[in-house]
Length: 108
Image (cartoon, rainbow, N blue to C red; front, side, top):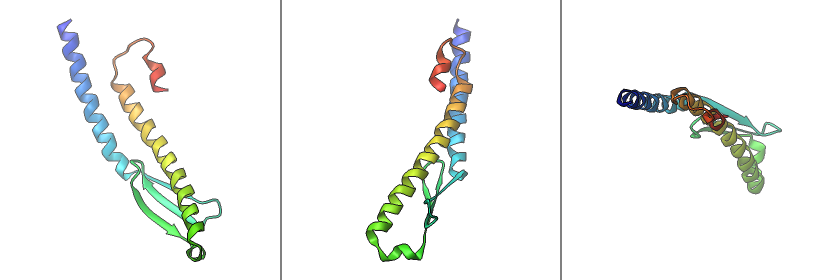
């Protein structure tokens, strides 16, 4: 029993290291989102750090419209980046979990 516990602890430490490495790797995974008409484009990392924002000159005349475009486009990009982030981290966590019946449903 003690050996099983030590093995599980080792597996947990290994999984923690893999999660940390995955989080670091996600800093280099880029997610792009563009407004429906292409006037605003944002790029984020999968860790949801904004890397660039491109705005068409036509939007610079109307502050309120520009703000609306930024909110909509950034929210879509954050949603997309969050999906990538969660999927990658869940895969690493699932890989490191002991085989406990019924636990599969937590990672779907």
